[in-house]
Length: 634
Image 1 (cartoon, helix red, strand yellow):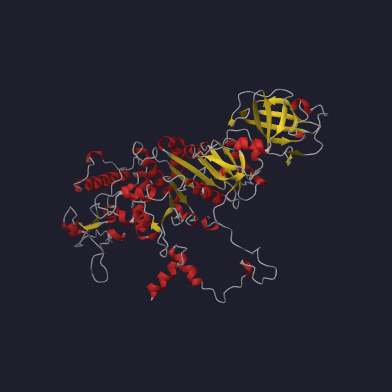
Image 2: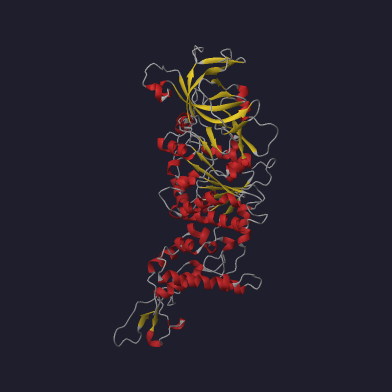
């Protein structure tokens, strides 16, 4: 033992796999030592130690300190004392060389154990020369001079997760990472798509993102309407959002499928320039057709009555419509989702006008009524009346599917935000699943093209993932994301899962995440979920999660050479997500201030709650809608 070394803190006394028990030397009279004029605390949980073995240095993380770190063989002797450390080995470096993950040899009894100095930290975390595949996300918590660098290739292709309780700095961390990845200087062709559940991220990326919203703010020119054409959905997806689910072998399901196929084939045949083989068209083919006409025809078939005394074969003139106040038949309007109204069945003897139902029905009256209501409710317009992608009765659209996908994943800006805050909560899971399935299929079939993910990989950022990737819900979103995290790497699709409750995330999805940004987590179930998902044996490090500061994260996994406690570098204040806590009382106000903010601000004399109700009814938070409302009333 070289007792003269100021970094020496103890010796190896027990080796059990990658776990090493270290007896502290009695030479250190306190928990503080000085190396090159800089003070270091000995035995800090999460700190590093170095064990020289021949021409190499083994590195480990302190996971346990004190009497509980005593080897089991000595625990019963009672005389072992309490000056012990337990260390988890994580990597090694050759003499004077860089650190690398994994170990090729193990320490032996009485090998010296040293604390890691600033010079060693630079050796572990530092990189020689400029390497574009390393992205700076902050700096090491123990040293502001050492950058926290993440491997971009591993971060995107091997998936990642950002987890942390509310208020831990999770959204700011996502914004910081995404801004680093979308730097025009370093990565001019980066491609990132954010599913923004609560509409938080537009402010963070106003200078580099296209924003698509269900409810656009009329006062903003940097927003476009989010459209999800119903005809681009697969058959089962479309049924789920319109008619509802049917048994696989049901007559109604099969008939609706046949009619959709026929409508899509008619669209293909009517397009002289189409190169699609009508024989190859199926119910899942993304080909436009008029679903409102399909609904109308099915409604007539289910509800229609006719004058049977005028002929056995019902024709338009023989249908028994109800009459309006002007004596005109109520035929409805397919384009508006207005159903026709029919007279009741009459079969009274001697009556001149016998009225019967149409001969064939499917017993889907409830489904047709529900679907008709959706056609009339504006909140469903984003997929039932998708703007330039809404087909006319002949199946023609103003814009193509190629134009839609180019806007989502091929625009001139590196970031695309799909703001789903206006999607009805009852269908959010399905909508997210359909969006992700479209993107996955698009890049899957384009894998050999320059537009595909192999040439230009795509990073999907899935905010508030626990709300739609719950392990107990076999929903459409969870099914698609499981496919992405298991197979997406081959086609250039990476996922970043963002959640405040990792314990609620589907285990398959979380286990496929190679890199974790773990911010403050107070819940024990959440911490154990992270510990179980990472490959390293680092329970001691993850036990620090409840005491992390806001904006501080432990980064673990494939994206970093070694787990590191990091202070995330936040974006400028005007480039942060709109997720800050409301001010109840302004802590920065001078003591003599009479209005400290929040609850300290005097209320208006007569607040106008009519405005509140108006926005509520219009299902929009934008005050510009109030101006439009006033103009309409004027």
